[in-house]
Image (cartoon, rainbow, N blue to C red; front, side, top):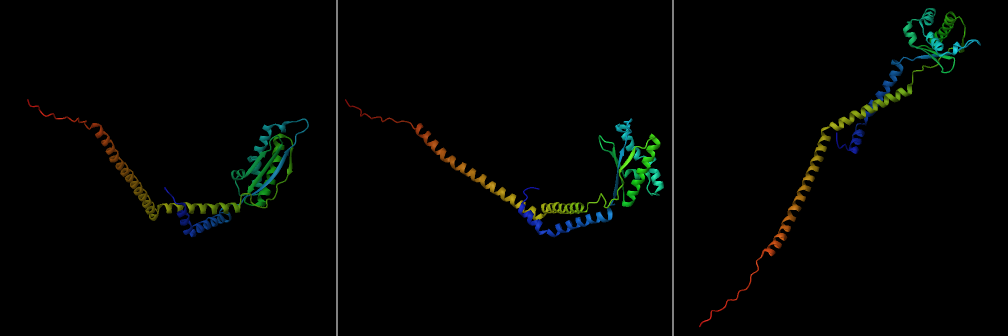
Length: 252
């Protein structure tokens, strides 16, 4: 792929605009189908918990203990009672993969969230998980030091759906794919190759003529210089003749 003429390439794109529009539209429609028929919308319900330490205890401030609380929230001991109580058709492995529990650094705050394909289900499971977590903390640690700062909310829209972004990306992919394919078609078209071959041949002929002209100029200059040199050498080599006077013999 050499010597691409940008003007001719743009003309080629303009000539095939219908393909560009068609596949860009197909890309947008694919994004629409993905948003509405393929992607599963997920609704996230979040809650905020605060660990309260008694005046004579600083255990809750220990990072290890807080990490224990975070992992406890995602344990079978906490979640399996919720699954049974709410008659969920979701195994523990699937439910735990949809749960997030994190601790805000340098604080005693734990933020938890649960995502399902139904907003109300997400809220009820989050509430049940928080209640079960508090119960298990009391049983295991003998203290009720978990307070709910923010109750589980009812999500109003899926958090993983970005319709405009998906449509934009899908349309851009369709557009770029068409541009690339048309570029290779343009590059491999026999007509384009013929034009390049003709251009290359013209350049070769011009180069050959230039070389020939330079050779002729060199050849023309050589005889002239040779004549000058020969003339100089001839003058220097010419013998000098002396006139000898012939004396008549004297008779006695």
